[in-house]
Image (cartoon, rainbow, N blue to C red):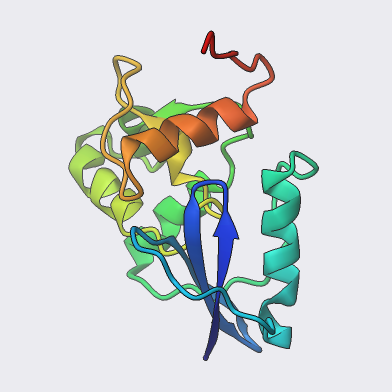
Length: 157
């Protein structure tokens, strides 16, 4: 496995992967040393993330190397089907899996998503439309949803 640290509008981002694909993308809550030379295995991911943050890309086309339970992988697969600029509730997601009672398990799998932004767990919200838990922080979740929205809200200040 190789890794790198890049800077993004939401903070330092760590990317981990190998010849089999990307296994981790995470936002860090501390200042880190930015990687001077990006490993070849991670270049495509870095470029696609930069395109995303610049507004030139809405979806990702990467080889992923996911490690998790079969249930987690099913949830992560469904997350990848949520279109940019759209949201879905945890309940809707559990219904898509065929078990509306699995809402807590779905939320848990969502929280263990190893590929920040690439697998768009930020597009999952509460049934009442609220921004509920997000490993990267609710301010980042809001930023990502605003970034992907076709109707961008402008700040008055």
